[in-house]
Every structure is written in C-alpha cells, then in structure tokens.
Amino acid sequence: MQAFSCYNRSMKTFLFFCLTLTLLLASNYELKDHYEFDDIDIYASDFFPDIKDDFIVITLPEGLKHFKVSKKRIIDTFAKHHITSIKKSYGLVTFTKISMLNTQELKRYLKNYYLKHYPFLNIETITVEAKNILSTLPQNYTISLKKQAFKHPNGTLLLTAKKKRFFFNYRIDAYYKQYYAKATLLRGSLITRQNSFEKKTPFRYTISNPLDKKLIGHVVTRRYIKEGMPIRKQDVILMPLVKRHAIVNVKLIEGNILINFSATALKDGALGDTITIQKSDKKRLKA
Image 1 (tube, rainbow, N blue to C red):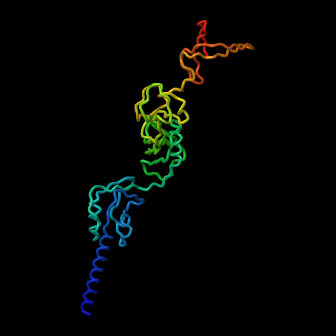
Image 2 (cartoon, rainbow, N blue to C red):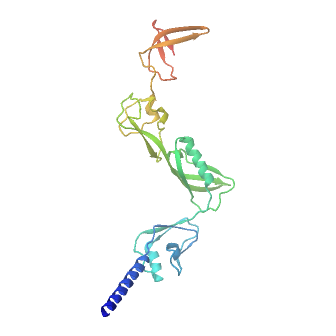
Image 3 (spheres, rainbow, N blue to C red):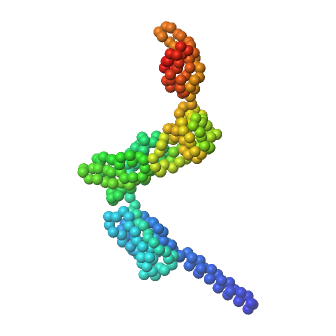
C-alpha cells in the first residue's frame, strides 16, 4: 500500500512538471518583422491575440504609411507589464498602415499600358500603393508615367488633379513564354521543337519580341545562337520557299495573255517576298 502511494505521488509530480513545461512553451512569444495597422495605437493583442490584459505598446506618429521600431524597445515595453516570455531578437519591426483606397482604375490603366507594348505578356498581379495617405481618389484626374516606363515591371505613377499631384508606387508581376536554343544553332538553322524549348520567363526588364509559337518549323536563324540563349523574332527569318540560283517556273499574265517560262532566282525568297529572277535571255524581272 505504501509503495502504491509513492508511485501515485511520483505520477502527480511528473504530470505537474509536463503541464508547467507546456504552459511555459505556449507562452513563448516571438515578434514578427512586419505588422499592419489601422490605428496609431498599437496594443499588446495586436502582437499576440491571446493576451487578455491589453495595453498600448507603442503609439505611432500620425500621417505616416510606414514606421520602424526596434524589437528591443517593444520587448522592454512588454517587460514593464510583466510579460517576459518574448523570445529575444534584434533588428527592426516595420509597421504598414492598411489602405482602404480603391486603386482598381489605376490597375486597369497599367494593365492596358503594358499590354499595348507587350501583347504577349501574362499579367498575374498588379500592386499599386499611394505614397501619401488617401481615402479616395479625386473625381477628375490625369495619369502619367515616365517615358518608356514599360521597360521595367515597377515604377511610379503620377496622378494630377486640380494642380495637385499624387504619387503611387506600382509593381507588375507577370511572365511570358520564351523559346531558347536547346543546342547551338548556326546561321540558317531551321527552328524546330527538337532544337528549341519553351520556358516560362518572369518579366524583369525590357523584353525583346519573343518568338511566336506558330513560327516554329517555319523560320531559320539569321545569325549564330549559342545554346541556352533566347530566340527572338529579330533572330530569325521565314524559311525560304525559293533558294538563290534555283530554277523556278514563272506565270506571267498580261491582259488576256498567259505566258509560262522558266527563270533563275537571284536570291532567296520566303512566302510573300518579292525577288529578282533572270530569264534565259538575261533579262531580269521582279516576281
């Protein structure tokens, strides 16, 4: 009976230890690097929602969209309220004011602007953020961008209304399909699915017209392209249907008269091209 009692007390001690350890671990808070706010007073529960006895940790300056506070300062404030279970860390915490501004019209403008220059672009998201605190956009305004802003996925948009100027930072997250050389291609190589591959490419800077998928098998390189390099529209020409020095059959129609004769092509020609041909009597014609 005595042995059982000792065992029972040992089990209670063990359970108490486990429960205490669990509570200690559960109360070990850790600060994030970034928080959003909609009021200048930042409460303890804004950091850790399970805190019951709430209090103001920091009051942010009015009129700012972004503000940074040292983690040590925040941890010290919690310590003054007898909360010492925050994991020690260093650096800064960034606070960003939540914006309720509707920027859909600005996003549509940016989308149309970029697709005008890059119709092949696949736009996933557009982020627009006012540099100043605004609740609504003015009723009448004009939008302007920097010259050749389309060369970069991010920039500044200027909104002008009644001689007042409002600036917005924006970012375009987009991609496009680009063909690359699977092996080194010599000048005059036919582009096929065997010697090229398509890759989803993020939009990071100026885009040179990528090769259209429909042209695969119908174009040849006009220059040397190293393995792994992109294949652009300016790097290829349509595959010639007629090659230089080839003998061609010519149909000449003059009024109601139809004349057929053979001639020599003096240059390569693709579908739709006009080339110079030479008849057997050395006379040259455009065909």
